[in-house]
Amino acid sequence: MQNAGIGALGLDWRYVAFEVHPDDLRAAIAGAQAMRFIGINLTLPHKLLALDMVDALDESAKTWRAVNTIRFEAKDKSGAWRPLREFAEAPRGIRSHGFNTDADAITRALRENLGVQLKGAKVLLLGTGGAGQTAALKLASEGVSQLFLVNRTRSKAEDLANELRSCRPGVKVMLGYPNGPVDLLLNATSLGLNAEDPLPLDEKQFPLRNARAGYDMIYRPTETPLLKLAKSAGCRATNGLGMLLYQGAAALELWTGQAAPLEVMRKTLEKEVYA
Image (cartoon, rainbow, N blue to C red; front, side, top):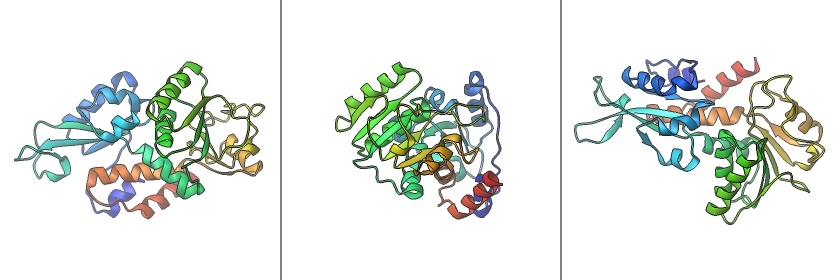
């Protein structure tokens, strides 16, 4: 997806993947910085760890409490920090600048892929880890009326609920499953990545027919057991491909300063994932 976008913009860049152990994340960021990378993306479990490892945090990373995109920058002659793409010669004194493009990607995907109107909606969120925390904060900011939090470790859900009640008093935040229907069921857990995984919810406590729409952040496999059951229950449901696309496009725009070639990136992503 990113290489297709880079090619469409005519840039002599290359996007590559590296497997990095969490214990080595700080060294990996420093290494990319020393080698004058334009930027990097981070995936689980690095997004929360990176908050304390970058030199500067964008407001998006501060607000949504996770870093999924880093842009490397240096000072120009006036002393202003500028992206590395703007320097003809390799500069010194480079810093890492952390951003979050996930939060906006979540809500854009929900609107465009499922037609969900979040203001006033009732939402059941499964998982309050890194992805779930970002989703909860963003959903609350969009003005959902009720947010039900379900997490394997109840104390983590309680901590997030207390924070949301403090910063978003207009949103009714509850722990556990709702008694009635919801407008959206959102899976932010990793359950479904593997074929042997159990469902991320207890159907005895919440039948899937009670969800009007369902979104699973997992995009591979393209149809998790949760999505399959949701569709069979008459629920509008889709996977996390849209979120992946939109967060990636936003990251590319941060690095290049140009509008991302969204349709080129979408077609390449769909070809890769659905092949």
